[in-house]
Amino acid sequence: MSITEKVLCSKSHEFLLDNGDENYIIGLTDYAVEQLGDIVFLELPEIGSEFKKGETFATVESVKAASEIYMPISGRVIEVNEEAVDTPEILNEDAWEKGWLVKIEATGDTVAEQTDLLEYEDYKEELE
View 1 (tube, one colour):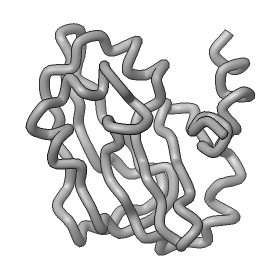
View 2: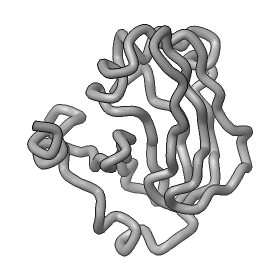
View 3: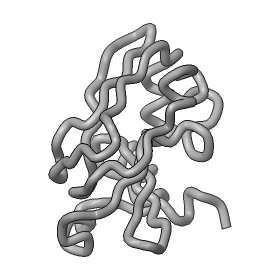
């Protein structure tokens, strides 16, 4: 099963991957990375930071633009992808596996908060 069969995507182009243990991986979709172009800078939050669904938790800069990244569900950051901070171009190489941004422990009603997220295939259709 590919990762795209397991992720949920937000309309603001973040993905959410359930680890199956109340923890989630969050990153930018391949579409978002493609639209940004060559990524040159990434700012991620500190471990222990808490965010509500919809709040800005990170910033990404490319040769084209700077963009805010929004939390798809409420959670507390438990891990940060330091490799992506040090070499942000890995997002361009592999947005799904290597280019994830943070891992969070969910703090809200995850079922209710995921109702507006789309399965990858539906997300791709929305883009057309």
